[in-house]
Amino acid sequence: AQSVAQPEDQVNVAEGNPLTVKCTYSVSGNPYLFWYVQYPNRGLQFLLKYITGDNLVKGSYGFEAEFNKSQTSFHLKKPSALVSDSALYFCAVRDRGNYGGSQGNLIFGKGTKLSVKP
Amino acid sequence: DSGVTQTPKHLITATGQRVTLRCSPRSGDLSVYWYQQSLDQGLQFLIQYYNGEERAKGNILERFSAQQFPDLHSELNLSSLELGDSALYFCASSARTGPNTEAFFGQGTRLTVV
View 1 (spheres, chains in turn purple, blue):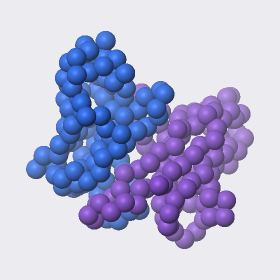
View 2: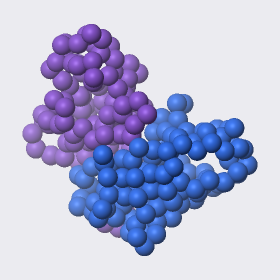
View 3: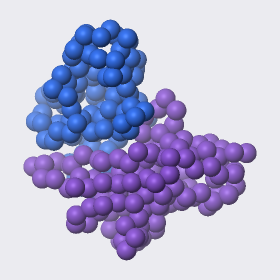
View 4: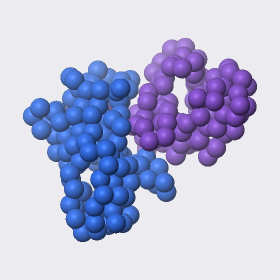
């Protein structure tokens, strides 16, 4: 079964410093990996995805993620954190079941709360 | 704005009652997913519909049911509500263009059972 793990419940970073939010995955076959962000009292917003190709994926708001097949990781990164980046971040993997041509559902990690202090 | 609309935004109801949550997917999206977000369980997949047919079931209780209508909007019905059903319920939609397609989420319906 597909799964993702986010080992850190919370990450604290000072504004201007680089940030990393960790994610490891377990899949059969090729992984389809996603990062979403959730601001307070809001829905999830798509940040970026890895499908194939370049291991460094660039996404919205200056975020990027590095896919590492040997370590089965897909860590989210940003070179310089902003206070406004403070939010809940979710890593997800697409389920690969046979759904008659439709997409399998997304399986989410438990989320990591990012706190960026001025 | 993701293009996915959920109503109502907030719902307060008593134990034992039944409620219906509504979702309008992005224009053209055939797949609709329902998720439950609670503090202790995180984001749990409930059920998926594709073009009106049920495609996948996750951790959905028997007291819960869903359907997708010909106009592609979906409803999640929660009955015999318990205090533990209090959560944020999200709907998401995606297009039928391959497994690499991201899902777009609505703002959610916050259900409080008292």
